[in-house]
Amino acid sequence: MRLRPRGLVLSIVVCLGMSAVPLHADDGQQPNILFIAMDDLNDWIGCMGGHPQTITPNLDRLAQSSVLFTNAHCAAPACNPSRTAIFTGMSPYRSGLYANNQKMREVLPEAELIPKWFSRHGYQSSGSGKLLHYFIDAQSWDDYFPNKESENPFPRTLYPEKRPMNLPVAGPWQYIETDWGALDATDDEFGGDYLVAKWAEEQLQKPHDKPFFMACGIYRPHEPWFVPKKYFEPFPLESIELPAGYKADDLADLPPEGKRRGPNRYFAHIQAHGKWRQAIQSYLASIHFADAMVGKILDALDNSPYADNTIVVLWSDHGWHLGEKEHWQKYTGWRVCTRVPLMIRVPQGAAGLPGGAQPAKCDKPVNLVSLFPTLAELCGMERPKQADAPSLVPLLKDANAEWPHVSITCLEDPGSFSVSGESWRLIHYANGDEELYDARKDPYEWSNLAGDSRYAAIRQKLFSQAPQSFAKKPAPSVASLESLPWVAASEKAIPPSQPDGVTFDVHFLNRSKHPVKLWWVDRQGTMKSYGQIPAGKERSQSTRPGAVWAITTIGDKPLGHFRVGDRSSKAVVPAE
Image (tube, rainbow, N blue to C red; front, side, top):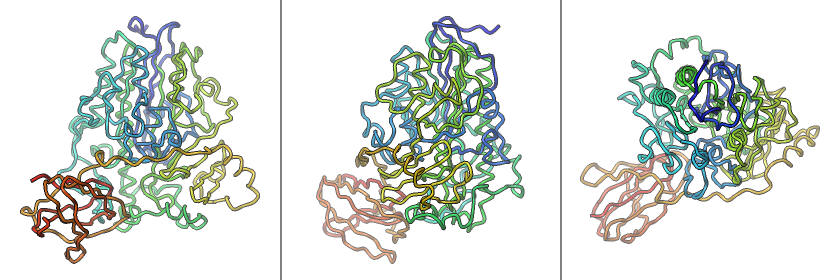
């Protein structure tokens, strides 16, 4: 017989992977919550069948004892808006947070996150690893590893000294972490997710005098795909299979907006260097590593006093393209990018579901934004007022229950979205372009049926269930932007520009006591004047990745320069 601490009965674990344990919880006691997320994981796990070579025994054992939602979708196909929607219960079309470059607390300064909600309801809320988008939000947690005041959610992680390791950098537009390789290191030496899992082990061994909300963020398979070499060994490069969803002429039937969002330079660059199979191998190895870390947490739970009173929920923030639609990464409305793993296991005794949840597969269209109200209902609490999605408890009770809802995924520009029904999917772009797919007959979305009049009624029904209005998209403040490195004139000669990529704004801030001149340096190294920036003033300038901007005195004495990176930034001219 397992013993459980006095005052603790039901535990809710939201995670990716769990072994079968006896499911029971006493009436009248509050549940614990263990919330584990994975990053950039698509359906390449055994129980979802996305790739035949994947190795995910821990995720698969959770699926065997859970309700596996086979038609779950993210609220947005990017980390920041997806995670913000999960932790606030607010969809992007209501919150206004659509993109990675926005700042959650600038857009939603008063929103209460899941950990704060449970803390306010008598729980001890703790977390580790990446749960929000590269920050912790210290005010929402009682405890965090690493230290929450640092606002850096990442434990020490081993990376190669020489980068890139396998994929050459094509230009300033390229995300520097698009790289991969096997490391000659143990799990402990690698750190990262291993230290997150180790922290969870330690927490589960401790006695708790309050119910707990414990969240673990597993970063892999997010780029860069560096993990210990033992996780590469089961995937010999010569055996690697390409994605089943790839089709060479897949863009032919797309509208202009779909064609614009499909091909990107990452996939072409990877193909040009003959690295496609190597990249797939590294993604599979990173999934294998992440699965092992989740298994470490689940084993710790199985061997803890809380094993018999734990609800488990598994989620990934969004999917990932590996060549499908000639695309690499995320940010699209296609199924390969919006569909995510989601598993929930509920033991008997939960206040909102006393009989627990029987293992099942559920094909109803659901969204990750439903997790907040679902957890609240399972714990017998009132529904969070800010939550805008339906609770999943009816489907946990009966996976085949009547479900009148669709799942909405918002793209970065307000008015562009996808609607996922039980068998059909509509992608609607803000300019009116559309795509329509029969997901059951065409799971890889190779045949766009939007222009076929035979399916007009299906299209109209999906569109009628989409949002009718969209919150405005606030731009991030200049203060919140990353700073470009300042290279003083005495340190290095001014290099020529190598502009390559889409335009965006860089904000020049003159912190000196004197006005300065702004110069663009062209590809030949010739400086062209762009006017003055008064002392203490700011100026926004449209530019491109790889552009070089020089700063001089009014008398043309060189002071220094900036090289633009791959995103909107601020360029601070220092005080003398």
